[in-house]
Length: 183
Image (cartoon, rainbow, N blue to C red; front, side, top):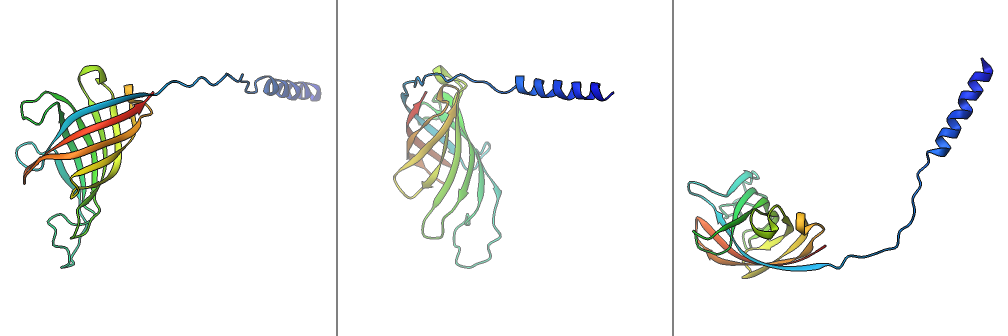
């Protein structure tokens, strides 16, 4: 019985030695990055029959110093529409889904946005660009960071310039020029 035990133990050691990980180094062959410039319009509806923004959490601020109708630390869910042009009847090319957090005080309006711009038509159908950046809404042209993507924009980086095309109490239309570096 002892012999059988020793045979089994030796056999187990030989199996573990034979099954160790093995790899062969390959030469580094970098792929050339592609640069894509995109231009489109984001349509955001704050109220009405089909709003694209909803408050999902809000701080309980009782201070009289806060005169804003939307207090510090309010969290929004977003499902904005992406179109080729600023007109209502422009072709829809995707949507921008994400979260926004109000991080400002009564003197400035800053938002922290996470957006995923998903495209549903054309050569980028099924691809998306992820942005995560501060959005100082009082600045005319804002720059947002492109931090990733999927599909044709896998491993993307870059920036977007966002400018309000029109704004009123119920609707914001923003023009975006996006430069994406991807592989």
